[in-house]
Image 1 (cartoon, rainbow, N blue to C red):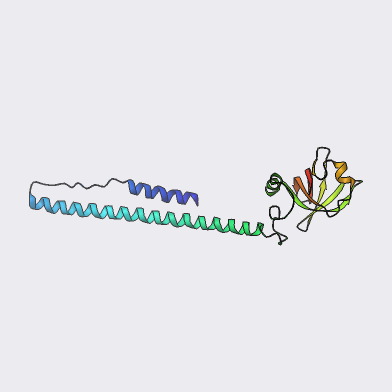
Image 2: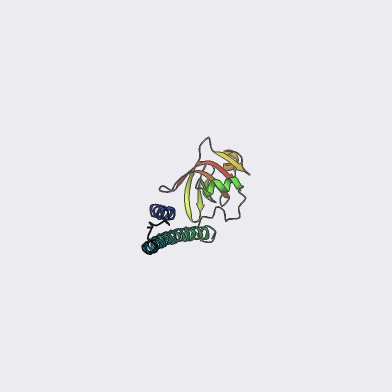
Length: 190
């Protein structure tokens, strides 16, 4: 698509830059000279008109291609935005549309796919494991000694020391959709 647009624009630029030959060969005989000048002027005018028509057609075609591409991109953007803004739709990304207490930085991290927000399910404080339920999809959350805890619980002991079943959390880390696991780098308890 870009190559076609580039070719059309290049063609229209070249057509617009062609030199216009307004001079004609004249002779000393005024009768023959006038006829030759008139014929040369007619040929030059016809060539100029044809070049202008070609340039106009190329510009119109390029505008149509650009307009169609812009409209298609706008339609995709609008559809994506509409889907993301619908928090009631279980298939929509609810990261930015939900009413949680996550900070702007956390929302941005999760919006680019570095984490999920949801509720805690299958909480086991002894084994320090839980499942994150995000839009009816469940992810087994794994922690490491390097996992950072923020919000109302700032350590693993704080987080797992109290029953967190159905608590709202934001978990940042590496998502493996195939195995439905999330390796937590940071857990924020809201």
